[in-house]
Image (cartoon, rainbow, N blue to C red):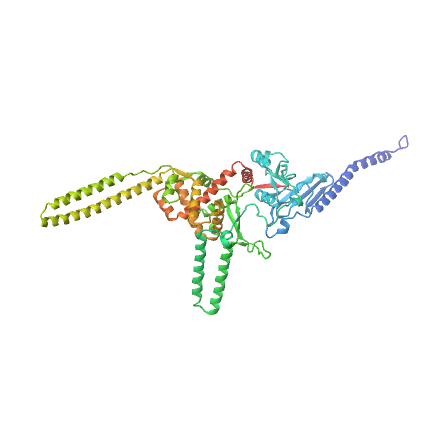
Length: 572
């Protein structure tokens, strides 16, 4: 018992218990705050339809969240039409989840663990997406590229300022795709997206980016037929011969088998005719032609789903150049002043070839494509009219002198001398003819060699003359432009492997002697044997040249270069 009546126990009770309570209060507060934050986080996750694992440490006031990380790609435009053209019904409101504005095809690629204290610190993991697919999807919905943003991204790269706009809404008033902070990007380009359903200005009837529509030659023929070349007519005749041959062959079979074979032949013929008369849409990717589709009864209420066409002869392969030529020509054909995005990059060697002056003007004269008066002087002029007159005068003088000498002879000698003179004149005329033919052949050979060495013309000028030559031969309709003809040629390349091989073989040969420094006699003979094919090839190369000149320094070049640098980006 102490002096004031208070024991040590009482002192400990009165002082120690309150102190102990005060020591527990922070733990209780941390527990309450942690549970409250955890509840808000779970509510946020439920509203955003996110599946996550959560753990809490009430003592240290730390909440751990495991959220899945996804790789995404746009839905199929044909198979998921309704979801493709509409926005997600449950977009995420969590920072980093702007990608949930759209419906995607998703694939989980891992987990992202976050340690947070407050609900507003939660970040949804960004998704990985192919940059070209993202831009293509936004363009398909109606987004408009921002030229300044793409030029800045191309020059500054990852140092481009946060918030820099790459894509705008269709009216150009709002930002649709912007540069995002690099917090969760792991060194990748980080982007954020925003979109409104009222901005969707396109639908499935529009042609998507990376696609080109090749018109059917039948759409331009008089009376519903076509303004196509004789090649299409020949192709149809060949197909008819094959069908007739099959019909004659099946007549020797039993009735049931013959009927089935006849129906099958009719079905194949109907498909061939339908392919000829329908437009073809082609998807061109980084690796060339990916898909070629034909739409039956396009635009009618009974239109069927698009059908895939055989394109193996147009795929890019290491041993054949058919795929490269087709992809380059299709890219050039689909490029216009309104073209924003192209996936396929025309090879530099083809662009360089298209800009060269490769075709000697003298060769065009020999082929009958150009009149010699339209070319600079390139051939030797032979003025031998005086020599011919001198030879004629000499032969007459010799004949007169011989006849005068014969007149002074006896009748028997005169008759023999006349026979000898006639024989000599005949031999002389034969020798003169041989000499003339030899001289003419030498001059033709000389002219051919001079033609090969004549000044070279650029592809565009050659194509203009070849276009006039094709129309003068009624191979193409007078009303068609060079670009329209190229479109019909590409349409036929998809349908006709033989035509593709002939055209690409001519292009390979042309490019080979252009790269080697000039045309040889054998190359000229190839042109003579396939002059119409060469004339059509010039139209194709001229179109590539026009495209290469039009795209230099434009938005399309900036955009394509950015897509080449960053294949994959983080979106959130």
